Amino acid sequence: MSVTPHPDDNDRTVPMPTRAVSATPESETRRQRSRPTTKHLLALSAVAGIVLIAVMAAGSRYVLQEKKPKEPAAPQVMQQASLPTAQPSPRTPEKPFGPRQQMLNEVFEGRNREHSVTASVDRGAVRLSSSRPGYVYVLAASGDQSAQASSRAREEGLDTNPTRYYRDSPVVVKDKVVDGYIATSQTPPGSPADPVYFERVATATTISEATLAYNNASYQDALALYQNAAVRPGGEQLRVLNGIYLASWKLGRANEAEEAFGKVVALGLSSDNLGVKFLFNPGTTNFWSDPQVSGPYGFWLRQIARQALVAKVCMNVVGHTSLTGSQAYNDRLSLQRAAYIKKRLDTEAPELASRTRASGLGFRENLVGTGTDDARDALDRRVEFKITGC
Image 1 (cartoon, rainbow, N blue to C red):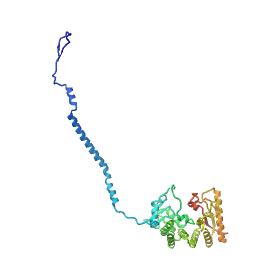
Image 2: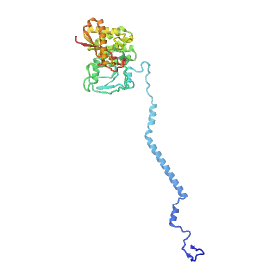
Image 3: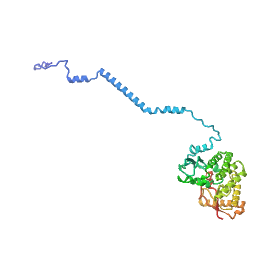
Image 4: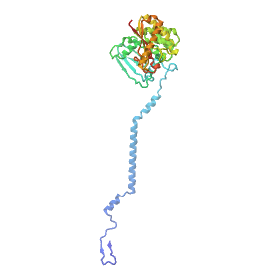
């Protein structure tokens, strides 16, 4: 290669060294080699495809492995669903279950979940009970309490409406047997059960079945069961005699009902306390106007007077009121109602005039204390006959 000067220049032509045209600088060669060619692109695409396929395969295998533990559950469920199951026994609208089964269902499966449930074991024998009155189911028993357990219920949503048996009951169903049951429930493991309760525990299932029949309005069945319990050892209980009275009255057997109520009164007086639910019109000393409620009050008073004469006892007639109004007002009202009952007793048996006295406690000894003034707190509006020294 040479550089030719401009014609006007006086300089001479200077020869310059030249390189071969085919020669390529080393840096240029490297640049040419680093440029991707079509073959390179095809090769890279193939490698990338292989890698992508490998990644997808690995991911699929991972997903399958993650789901693999759950796969056996599906055939098991299908297999269990296909197994034949025992058909339930035919039900009738009146009695969907047997008395024992229905009682347990109510305690553990539905209406009574908000009530406390107690289970105790007596040397291998299990006794289950609910806080709902009358619901005691006895499988077996022994003389010693070996273990016990209980659960508490919350008051929110608790249905305080009494069952038919306790709503219709003329007396406070609480005697030495009930006290013995409570004492046994509180007995530490290893200690003897209350003897009064234990001697009568064999009759508890029959009483529970009878009460359930009464609550289901099966009064004829209830009467037969209560009468069966009455002739069994330990059947002389307030719950039994009270049940015979209730079922007889519902069946229209007035004479049998009065006779049964007389036995209720005699048993109550023998325990030195008898509480009777006399309902009055609000704020008055007049009996409740509905004859369906106050209709039997006449023979209640007659039997109380007769049994008190037979027992030759002196009584304090104590009036109670519900939790409504001031304390002074309820004290006065409870005394007036007790005085009215005493007057009626004196009319039935004049000999009782000097052996009875009236007093009022207002709402200071409420058993329920809700102040609803309906069937739920009827026990608070009662008159008690407490035995005193003459």
